[in-house]
Image 1 (cartoon, helix red, strand yellow):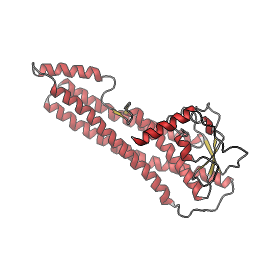
Image 2: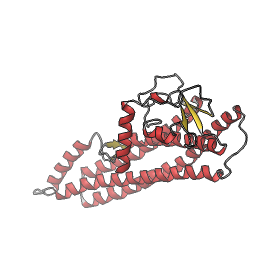
Image 3: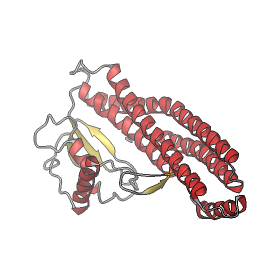
Length: 295
């Protein structure tokens, strides 16, 4: 995210995705509860067929929406970089190896990552429901269907709040799909926009960027050490922390609760702007990211 006027576009992407996810996942949960009312083999098969069709439909709908939105986010990043380069009088392309395909590949890579992630989520939802079906079938049924319906009623009561449309992440947290997709779409849109911005800078031989806080909201603890500081995009300028290193310490982290920073290309160091005093929150974030990368 670079300029506040672009925020409306990102919010539109989030709201649209959240609504679509909520609609599909609500239908999946409703199909489960319908099956639990009458858990016969026929109803279990009907539920599985309905569940799988809904999940395929959801995945196709999400990817159909994501592709043009992500390309638009990339274009925003390029446009912002172009305006700043023009303001600094930087007109000559330095890296001719960077072409239109370079930007397209970056977006396609993010789209592929999203599709893999959402596909894994559909498998998680299937797994959640299969555990319930297994529990139903393995429960004692001394009184036949009557006993099974009693067990189904108990399971339904237990699932009333969360249903089965959640997944367990790499560190064991159970996350509602709606919440995760909202965060993921926002993060991916902003990341694509930022990545295109940085690639455009590299294309024109610019390696330094300043993080400028807009002073609309107080910055968070993770981002505070980087405010007003200059970073190296590609690691070409000695004496400056790279963007990748800063991200490992928490810069640009998901779910940041203050307005995203503006970025300034080709800044002039006014003295000491490459010195970054990290705090305990940054150190903990680095430890967390290192552990996550090993999972």
